[in-house]
Image (cartoon, rainbow, N blue to C red; front, side, top):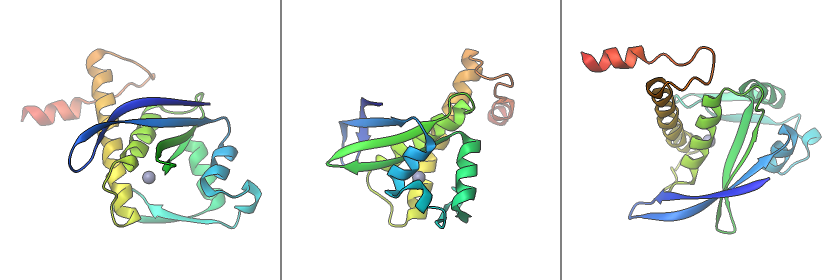
Length: 165
Ligand SMILES: [Zn+2]
């Protein structure tokens, strides 16, 4: 399923309207195959390394990566193809924590913003800043507007106390 939104895209010099095309996948297998351009059963030897968003690096087996994605219940990647900004994603809507999905979409949107960072770790950290911003905004909005989307809700008491000091 594909759909698209128009949104502001900041560049160094100006802000322009761009379109972002979203592609939603029905299964994790399909999006993994698209992301790695390889059939799923040929990926088992694959080692995954990347940034953990806190300046560290990780190394995972393919199996571990899949287990992590299933726990998170969402996965995505951003790319630019034929001049089109694209965000591809899969989400298990019965099990995902909304905040993880919001963070994912914001993170991938962050990747579409220029300039790109020189190293992939720095690029991941850049994208994570967008995710941090979006998830904080969601938490605050839920608490202030009284939007309860999960049993626990979010406790932002700490933030409020901090600001009053
Ligand atoms: Zn990323």
